[in-house]
Structure formats: structure tokens, C-alpha cells
Length: 195
Image (cartoon, rainbow, N blue to C red; front, top):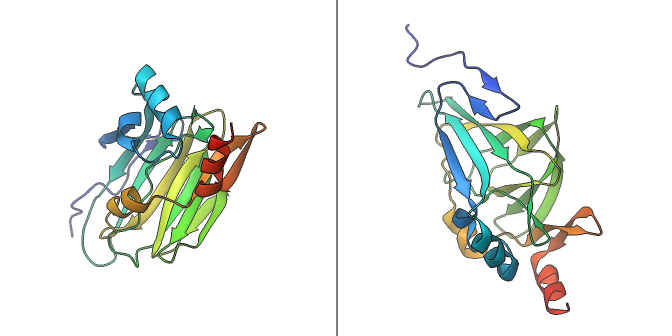
């Protein structure tokens, strides 16, 4: 049987690209409403519509058992005290799990299930993180260099960004005395009113 897609691909862990695959760019304007500190967001956006991350996907086949994969390249930086992050999403097919492999940089994965329970785990080079089904996930770059990771997921997982856009994550990752710290969004917002 002849393969309908390339079974061999090459990727660059430094640039987060996959040879021959298209990349999607996400800029600051694409994350309007995602950062908790809207004043800091507006100030950053007024200066520049900065590139936050790229995603390069390979979607070779469909059908039972097929896998898709992609590389994300998340730049370092902050909006106010919040570290650069991805939009985050549930999978459209909620049972779909995903597996992340850290290639470069340092960051955190935020998780939130459909009942609102939240937790986080680090992602670093040569590490793997299992993302269970029915769980929203967002990646945050907490280091000084780009965070690059490979994600592998079922072909029919899909992406539900709408739910996150409506309710967002209940936790944020912010700089506290030079250290990345996971905080409840509501607690972080209270610190902004005390300044």
C-alpha cells in the first residue's frame, strides 16, 4: 500500500519549524481578552502587535488510529506581570488526550477540567507531559528563551477555543519578585486594584 503522506518529516527544535509544513502565527491582537491585566495589555498592544507564538502542524491522515502533530514556538516576554502564553483550548472531541514533548526553553502547562479544577506542571527540554481528555490546556513561557514543544494528538481532536474565550482559565502565571508564580485570576486582579 502506497503512503498518502510523508511518513518522515524533519523538524528544528531551535526554530520550532517542520520542513514543508505551514506555520500559524499568533500576535498580541489575537489574545485580546486572555490576559487578566487589561490595562497592561492595552499598553503593550499600543506599542506593538508583538508576535507571541507560532504553531506548525502536520496533519497527514484521517481515520481510526491516525495521529496529527505539531510544534509550538512560544516567545519569551510579559504583558505587565503575566508571562506570554498560548490561547489555550479544550479539544472539540472532549475525550481526546494529547502528549507534549519539551524541546527547548522552560515553561508551565496550565490545566483546567470541565468542572473548573485547575493545576499546572512544568515543561522543559527532554520532558513529556500527558494532557488528559476533557481538560483545557494552555502553555506559558516562564524562561528567557523561546519555549518549543511537540504535541501529538488524535486526528479528530479538533480545537475548541470558544469556551476558553468565554470563561478563560481560573489561574494565571505572573512574575512575583522575579519568580513565575501560579495565582488565581481573581486574586491577581485584586492585587492590581491595591497598587
